[in-house]
Image (cartoon, rainbow, N blue to C red; front, side, top):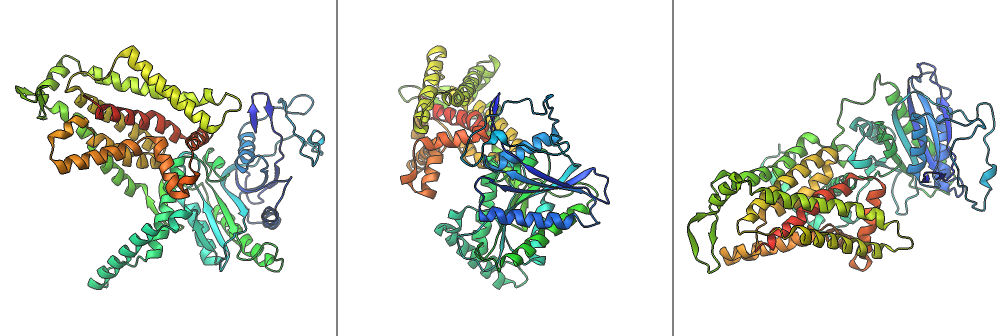
Length: 572
């Protein structure tokens, strides 16, 4: 774990390699078992025992065509850190000095167990880094004791990697098929627990179940058999899949493999019995060992890496998914109005009439006439300048956490307040230097057009980097772009429409601001008593550390769009 350019924490990864008797050494399958050597738990010991039994079996077989690598990862500094460090050394040569040690200063910490200055690895070529072939797939194996009671052994699959990357779907299909049909395990996908217990989601599920029964009564050939429980579990799984992809942070150490384009998943086995029950451990080891052996056999029989299936998908169940060809249609329809609304003022058909200060209509003068004059004289560049400066301000806000984090002994709440104060000051300074973005009565139409164009480009680029982030962001940004207009313009419409517009604008102005939206959502799920101002700082710092593209989207696309939205609302 790198702390700075000349200091690193010290950990030991234990690696074993089985050379394939029927292979050429060009490909390998990796098995990972993370554990903390200084405070090992019973679940970690059981996962090591399971991996060791599999490794012992595979060392005696003759059907292996790919090398097998077993990595016992030292997870005292985090599971992802140890696996990432090993992968970095695996793919990048590490040079040693003449004394046989790496050219880096280690910062050893005494922890009461052993003086790490005296840790040595002895033997012939002890400092030589052992390698196998190109990694075809990787399995991260973990055993976890569940607190709630369950009728049989279960398997939970974690697949999300950094910035919404997913492994090839065939790898998940293999694990699911072998676990359910061969070993009788209950396979689950990690879900948001609060949604499974949601009352409103259960109510919607009951309505869907009744509609399916009614449709089936009309024609028995219609196979609508969705139950309320299946709907709730599928919706929670879909929401969880989108959420973890949108956050852009790996859900396990398997995410380190996806950074090197290696398909990997984390398999979390949970026995139905207590881990201290020695009589049931043998059956559990046998069932889990057969599952891992079957997956390794399936990957071993491949002539090439997984590539024929999906890489872009949302999981709704361990054996059900929504492919890119389906959800891209909904996303395209969602953002399709943006370019149309952006070019509408330039078509010459927009008949928004201007009014004077006395409320009298200006004869023979429409907003479309002003548009044509502005385009011809390049006055529309004023709106483009406002949008550009707003995005420039967003870049300043983006970089501020790096400098604020350098302040020693500062709490998250104080950091958040400093961040908001500096960001507001930067915006006011831009106003003082460059003047107000408001000009004449018709300028807001141009400002809205350029704002929509910028938002459309940002959403399009984000859909390539992380589709889930773009999808969730579009649900807020698109309504903001479509209904925004100055508040004083609402007087021209009927009372009911005015109330509806004012309500929508108020909701979007509040929910469109990222810190407010996060605090409200966290309060709904966890209770408002546990919500603090510093929570957004902790979350933003979390995204910053993991290099999540979601952080860039929030501050370079979403925040400028919200600021311009407020500009237009307050336009005179």
